Length: 501
Image (cartoon, rainbow, N blue to C red):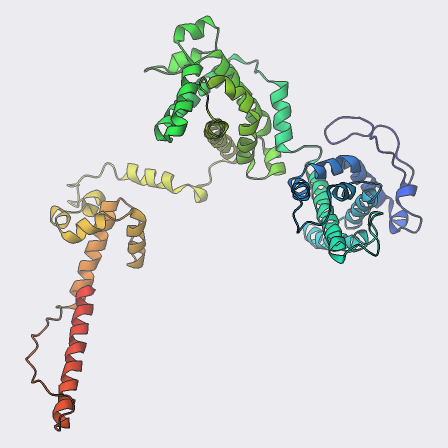
């Protein structure tokens, strides 16, 4: 194939020239199978090359990974189980020592060789491609020793070097697969930092009023958090409320978009000041730009939780303005995390509602709460003395005063509802309803079982036995004595079992 020249459109929309010099003849030898491959396969390989970052950029990601940092920390601490020094760990990511470029090109070549156009075939080819990569690693770890490794180097140190190489190679393949599947979309923390640095403000007045109204709802959630949090966090939450609130007149004088709050206000609502409104606007900008179906496909179903986790770290600098007292960093981080998590739940629910509205109502997937509400509305008009003279379900399930006075009822009503639900399942009873309804069902079922068993066994008083001395000459009397005692023990056991049931 001819060398690829000129600007190429990356999948982020830019037409920047790829900076890596790409020469197929230098990458692929003449005896390589790809050189004789069809033109479509060669073009697919060239497309893969230009969609993936340069080797240097991928190695920087490996250097910033938690795994590599742990290795360096262990080497600095001179842990006995770690044999590689910091200099030798640096050689792992040195392209002059380890031929990472060759591994990357061979990995992309294996992907192009296993290209498929059907779902069933793609799964099979994916497994074959994994086998190809593992075969590459066998050769990769053999011929990439640094100059300091010779015959006198211990076997354990060589094994550790090879193990680190293989681990980094798998991490490299993971980054390559992410770039091929997500395109140029970076990691969530990186994108969040970029969004926060750019800033964002909506031009629509209605949107501004909605965000300002949401900012007041966030302050209300902070007040609720204050009531349920530990004492160590209460003062920090009080500081935020104190430094974030303003009066209605001040909000109007500052030209804040408070029209929606004024429209909805029947009682005392919160009016956030300009600083807190700017903070919520920053938080909303992240969710506004990242919470989409395409990003959901890229980053997975935990998108909202991942945004919340990364945002709680990226917004810490802006939160410092609301802490008027000297609080520890741990308290500030935890309070910020709780506030962002509360906001994330709000936006996540809104996002799910929009997705559900696009898909339409699916009655076979309706939530149990919705079905319970519909059933309650349907049975609301039924009274105890209906037209047919029958009592309502509520009256039938409600326990009577006689049952409530029983000791069994007092014992069961003190139990937790999951315990009562488990007991109802054991007795094959319905598990819906309040605790009182469940207790009544259990007591009625026990009464039916007791009635079905018949009258309880009444213990007969034991007759005084004639004392027999052990070892007496009358063996027949001694055997009679033992059989009588055993018989009475069996009768008592039956009686106790019956009473227990």
